[in-house]
Length: 630
Ligand code: ADP
Ligand code: MG
Image (cartoon, rainbow, N blue to C red; front, side):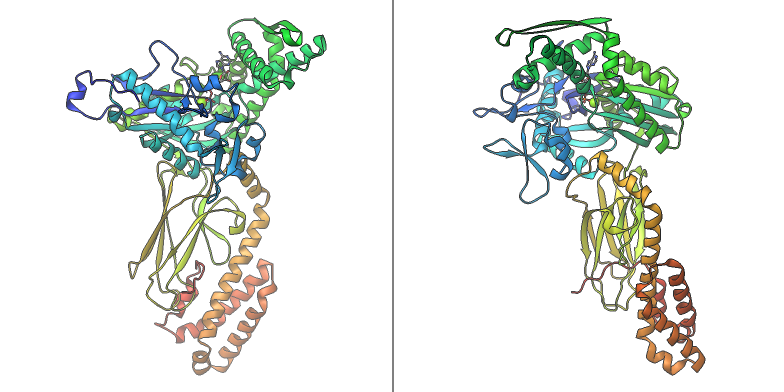
């Protein structure tokens, strides 16, 4: 840890330094601050601002971060952890796709479903790795700003727009490990738009095209009254500059094999070297018409040299670029827009320097893209501006994001009562009333769900909690208000309160683990595909639920009915009641609805007879949650 004497006059008045803006990237991270009204990325001296998001854990010494860690990747791959952002807040199930490509080992934690990294002699969490990267950002800031570490304890951190609760919470814990309090998490696309000052441009819709090292994200934002909302997101968690490198590597390796008969890719060391040469060649082709690819391995008798021109390179990567455009189409479709509806296009990520990418995106949207800011630093600049907003240095900017999947509660019928809908603007708040199911019930269990499907079993369970201490009352009388609050960081706080007694319970959802964006897409696709059959199933489940509520109420008061109803009324009620009792096998909504309507009508005289009695409440209240016997 570096500590430096306090310089400058600010420090005399305030013990708190500036709020840091941090772009925690998959391959690189950056830190920026707002100084004299302008965002500035911090770099070591005149050097590079990019801190490789890599941590290496030597067997016999303290962990090293950044460039030093990257240098160890070649000879200590199992203890050199990169791409920790892909792992944070995820469970093993989420990471199945990654397992094959990561050179280090992942294992499942004993107690939770979280994935851990196995170094052989010990296990570490992905957030501890991210924490060390964030620590490096904080130390760089301390050294460049000449401030003691204690004064740099607050940060704004950017995350992909699609990060879910678990991923955001894990990122927050990582920051805590680095001694940073996260004042706000901002979506990366929102930060990029802010860096270009598009919040003041007056244009309303912005597409942010972010092609990094290993990930591609396309987000569509809408500006309303100076506020950004994310209209939709799309992308590919395994598409980026690494694939461009691989395209060069594979083509050259094939030629090497043809010429010398050596399969260079079979050797891990050679592959690492070829990857670096490929990346260098790719970068050169961003500003020159041709570049040389040179690889010598005297031990294996390889002496290879090839001049690659930009047309050849374009041919190799064109299918990859096409995939990014396909994602653009999807995001537009999802937001019900066409390319003409987009007013500004922002390029983010190192791979947007590739001329073909720029040209393809411009052509797709039919307009010139914003590319005047360095695409590597634009997100960090936006984070610094947001930090300035929170620190009171910048006014009139408030940033919003959306939730990728709906959030709701399981009902007794096995359906989902959705409180916060997909694509709702974060922060979001919603309330719904529930009541008890049987007389004297003193506790209610709530199961919190995420997903678009109509049935609870098809959605993802985020957590559950029990509201206890409801005074014994007849069924349907307690009024339980459930409040969902999805805060600015995408963390869900749920509170249930019984209004008469004041009994309450709350939970901050501790998701078992996050969802990959493929899973989010699959869940959405499933929801569309099954929308119709789900709807029928849901209707039938709801009708059965209502029917059994009314039946229960009638059953309870059959004695009252026999004493108080006329013979015809009683006969009709008894028949309807019998039909309802026989209805459990019916799976079509039409006939069920008929039986329910008839029972309700037949029960009217009874309800009148029971005036001032709670039965009517029980009949009316249908959103009943699962019963817990205490
Ligand atoms: P991430 O957000 O995933 O951390 P970055 O935005 O830092 O990624 O982008 C890194 C990628 O950009 C790498 O694949 C790198 O090779 C590529 N890149 C950087 N500079 C250039 C360039 N001049 N031309 C082409 N690609 C580049
Ligand atoms: Mg990035």
